[in-house]
Length: 173
Length: 208
Image 1 (cartoon, one colour):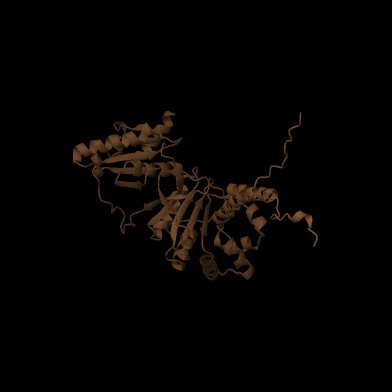
Image 2 (cartoon, one colour):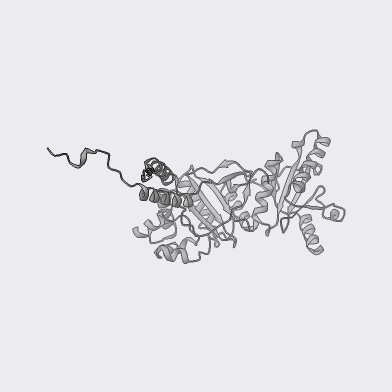
C-alpha cells in the first residue's frame, strides 16, 4: 500500500489563540462587574421604650460627656450641668472627627472619670444629634464609641441647654 | 564557503495551559459574581470600623437617601409575596398575578401603600424613571389603621416581621442624609418594639 503523506502522525494542532482571547475578554468583564466587598454592619441595640416618660435613671453629671453633632463635621462637647441658667459658665469646645479631635477628648475624659470614680467605664457619653445633623456624623460618633471602648453611651434628645448652645454656636458664625 | 543553513521554524507556543487558566478564572468569576440589584435609589454609605458582616439572607432593608426619602425592601421572594398579599388585604388593593410577579422582583419600593398597584402597573423601565416619593412615616407613634396620619413604615416593619420572624433590620443611610429621617426610622422601630437593628456601613481602612 502506498504510504500516504510520509506517515507523519502528529496530533492535529488547534490554534488556541482566539479561544484564549475570548476567555480573557470574559474574565475582564466579570472582574469589572463583580463586587467583592461585602457590606459591614454596625449593630445598634436600643433600650426598650419605658412605659412611663422619664423613667431614665439619673446619671451623675460628673460622669458624663455630652457630644453635640454640629454642621460641617464639627462636634461640640461639654461636661456638666443640665440647668439652662449655667449655659454661660459652661465650657463648650469644638472638635472634629480626626484622631486628635474627639478621640483624644473622649480619652481624656475617660481618664478623668477613672481618676474620680475608679473606673473609666463609668463614663456615660450622651450623643445629641440635631435634626439637621448628617447621618455620616452619627455613624462616625457611634464608631468612635467602639474604638474608644466607651461602655455606656446613648443617643438622646436635645435638652434645653443644647438648643441654647447650638444657637450661640450659630450666632458666632 | 558553504552557507550555514538556518532552520526556520514557526515558533508556536502551546496555548493549552494558558487557555486552561483563563477558563478556570472565568468560571470562578462567573460563579462568584452577583449582579447589582436594580435599586430605585443610589446611596453613598458612610464608612466605619465595624467588622460584623451583614448576613446574606433574611434582611429587611430600610434605605434613606440624601433627600430623606425612605425606601423599604425585603430580600426574599417568598416574603415579598406574602407581604404584598397581606398589604392587599389590609388596604383593599387589587393585585393581579402580573403585579405579584413584578413585586417579587422589586428589591425596594418607596411609595405609599395605596400607590403600590399603580407602581406595579408600570414597566420596569418606567419604574426606574419614576421618582418614588418615599414611604410615608407620618406620626411615628400612630397605630396602623386607627390614626389619620398612619405610620406606614411601622406597618410594613410589623408585617415583615410577622411573615418572617428571623428577619433582621438593616438601615442603609446616605452619608448626607439628615439625622431627622434616621431618627424617624429609629423611633418607628422602637415603637414597633424592634430594639435591635443594623446600620450598614462600608469598611474603613485601619489608618483612618
